[in-house]
Image 1 (cartoon, rainbow, N blue to C red):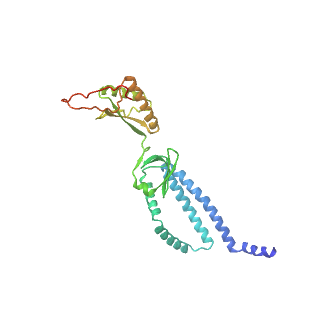
Image 2: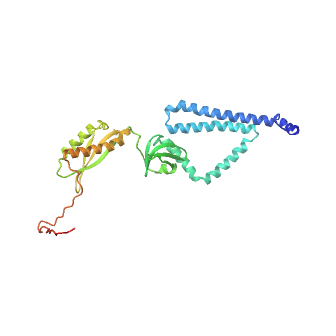
Image 3: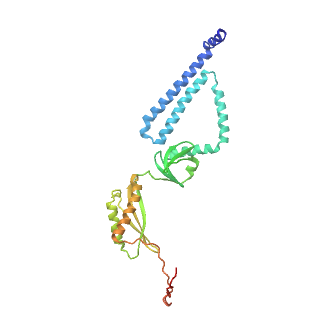
Length: 281
């Protein structure tokens, strides 16, 4: 054992051991400093930045500080940074050719961060996907759909797609396309609808509800009835208002028609004969 312990003691007292200890200390101090710096910047600038910008600032500041301390620790261990930077450059070029899709996603992610079309926490619709933005990263965005699914969409696809932000503005308009029978009085129908909107607490008084005539359809007079609600109450209004309109139409005897077909043979033709068959199924 004495023969084994003696070389260990010699190594512990050597410059290599001292350099290793200093390198480990620098790594530990670097990680602590990186966490403190990233947290401090987030607290100092968080009030002026959006959620995804805070995430990006925290990550960039953390890895920058940690990378500086890592480089210093490598110098302590005797590594030549010029050689490492040269190797890193060659590796970067090779990775760039091998991962063109990733590079495209990174560039697209930078455009998304700069454009600010949506932010973390907002609701967006893209193609057949609708959900809450969970995070905006350099390679992709993450969404949580209303049925609680986690969806990852590459930034390259996002930058090319048409995005609808459903929660950017504080209020939203609800457009209902309705129809009534041709014999109904539209002024009376409009009065009933305005009364329904006035009694619904989720309908905003300003902007005021609007009644817009659409067309003389095959079986109905169609019109658009538009009301406004805060974005938090939009879905509740969409369901509740239609139920109230149906009840109000039933109460006032307003007919909501279904498609009708009339057979017309011309003014000079005889009426169609009708014959009742006994016992027909």
